[in-house]
Image (cartoon, rainbow, N blue to C red):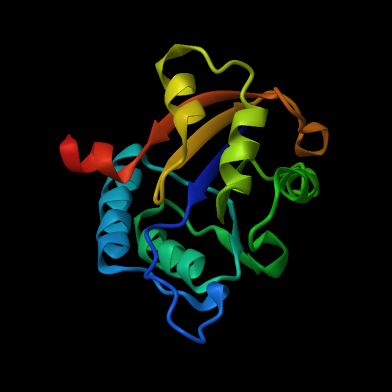
Length: 172
């Protein structure tokens, strides 16, 4: 069984005049959210073997704040193709993950990341599925168990195992 984690970048600062969208940094609220998620990840012993991260500033900063809390030392790949990737792009990329890799964390953007998460889920029923279907706010993390190899990843091929948002962590 393989594990897939999908992380939407944390809250970003508004786009400044003349600034490219991909260069937007995290807002202070986003930095705090990633520290809180890091505490949760450490307690869960979250240990992806591979991290695939969009090349935007906000995704790279989100990862940099989370990385020290991850168990183990994952291979990290920063990929321009993940910037604002749609569900089809994400599916194609994940199908190329080597079979030997047991767990992957993708750090990306909405709307593609949320749409992809919903498409992967076998059923949107139950509390986790309903919450995921309702949206994936900034800083949200969804975890999935996959029964087949990465090369066979497809719609409905995953079981949602975790779903956590910064708001839930603050309210806990």
